[in-house]
Image (cartoon, rainbow over all chains, first blue to last red; front, side, top):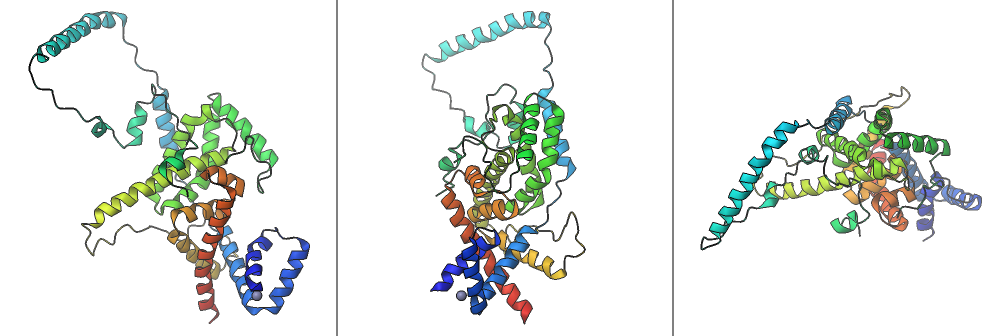
Length: 154
Length: 212
Ligand SMILES: [Zn+2]
């Protein structure tokens, strides 16, 4: 019965979370109980192995790619010359008028066109999305609701 | 779960490091390109090691680290310093890893209908050992034990693995992990106990084999 209590103390002892009195009590128990002594060795080895796990080196190309994407996002958009804009305006007007006329004609008795699935067009590729992000109001910070909405916790 | 101010009681955070970090963030927010570069250099290896152990293969880990940095860059203007920079970065990385695991689980589920015996399914690609700073004193036994532990971590459920890696490998405090995962501190502790218990079983079997 008592052993369960001391087993719970082993990690606390390693992390210095026990009081001096508790430490003394644990040490005495370990001397008297081979089972807990064995467990103590296992906990120490586990702790040491976890703390000693090596850092892995992140390849430099990852940072290069991030830099490149940031540069790309920051690059100014090409400026359209004023005369091109002037020339574009009547053309756009014509397109809108034609579309309006076409819609009016189709309203008479033609069947409805099939709906275009916008979800199909959504690419899962984050990078692609982010190439268009200069204009999007996008919050990359995970919201507190993230785990709740995705059902990750509890 | 995140406190309104950065937790100075976190067991391994030092005040000097925090103020240096705050200055770095300020500079990065003021569009100082070298500051973001510094942030990447500071955290690349830490985050990469963590992500690699979370997802189990280097190719996915590289993609996820890249995405972590891009999201951090995009989110910097809104970063208000309520959590420390490292907590915030781990949070972005963790969310991406969880998303990734969920997508992968769906894919495996779909693929398994057609899988043949030769496929072997999705296997992790651990490459042991790759010590960045080799310690000549480290014995072969210790390395073996580390491999046992790495394998045991790989077998944990994502929930347990996340908490164990953040606490025992990445040195985050209970409070910081609660903030990263948006869960109560009590849940962090119970998951950690559970995870450690499972790792210990593998270590125990290994040590028993060694002592024979
Ligand atoms: Zn005992």
